[in-house]
Length: 200
Image (cartoon, rainbow, N blue to C red; front, top):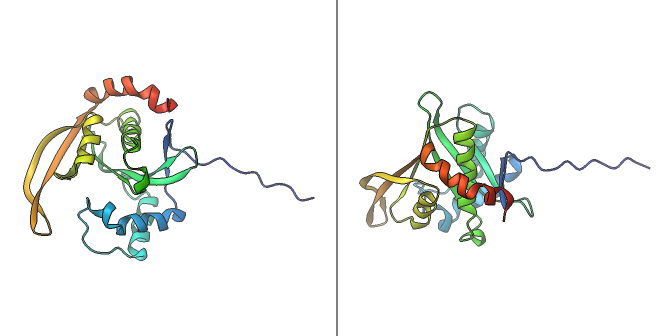
């Protein structure tokens, strides 16, 4: 009789109660490509052209190659280990203690369940408590109410706007910049952290 193959548990980077963050891999490419080209998901992106599999693969390979301090992770539902989106930290400066955060919940049936808040709080836990950053920034369109609400729930506050910065059809829209400092985020983590980590 042949030996049974040992089934390894999934690789998890930041574990939460309902969602966790894990490294992306090449098998995630079909989902990333689908979300990038979905008009309802990409409505809040500055991209305005279709993205090919070649381009998406190149971007994924760049993030996997660890060529910079930038971090890109998958958001997965713990109960099924299903990939539902991504989070990232860009322009990470360990000198200045700053970074830009972003999140995409590409699985539309998962919208409105609080997964974005939980994933962002896990990302901020990593940014502040492991990378020792002092400030994380967030940018979005002024009409992206869901993104702004998620950011503010995580402690972000609006710092400023670039008026009429982007064109969307026949309208010009503001680019909204928000940020959260470690000292402002920590009380929220103390309040919500246990629930987020236990899923209760």
